[in-house]
Image 1: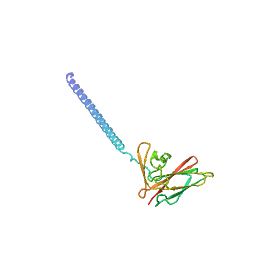
Image 2 (image 1 turned 60 degrees about the vertical axis):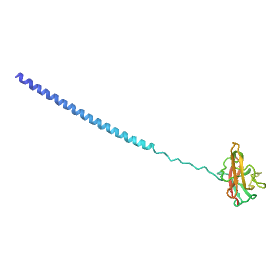
Image 3 (image 1 turned 90 degrees about the vertical axis):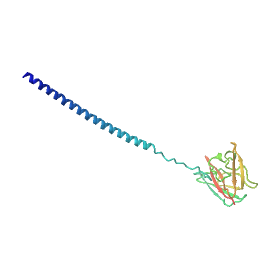
Image 4 (image 1 turned 180 degrees about the vertical axis):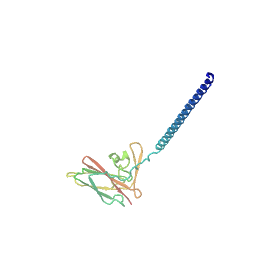
Length: 213
């Protein structure tokens, strides 16, 4: 009897070992599949984020640039109103009358006037100096015409009247930096009279276009 029981015990033990190995193998396979699924999910999210990040970095804003203003300019919010006489179809020697009237109780201390290029946009005092900026005439085109007129006001500092004799011609100016500038005023080249108004705490500019025949 003892000899017959030993083979049965051995066989039972072998079956237990095989079952245990199968359980372990099944668990390992399940764990590996889960890890593979998790890894695949992580990879997919990373690719989506990378794609979104790449697409966002390729979108660039469209630059907006303002063109540089040219031509007659008027200083905003000046406490001075300007009225002018006829400025079209002029001939050399014709007079343009400009009246600068104070507004809102602000006096006008004086007015300067220069004949300048029609394409100049005078916004600063230094631009009026002929040999510095080359935008305005340093001398008249001809006798009986003006390149610069200044009228100083007196108390009670009311309206100021400037009478400017325009001229026609062409003039080349030698500038301080060694370059040259040419200003032409004729039927094909409009010019402007630039007024500089002086008032309390500052001054302002107004360009008055003039054309010739």
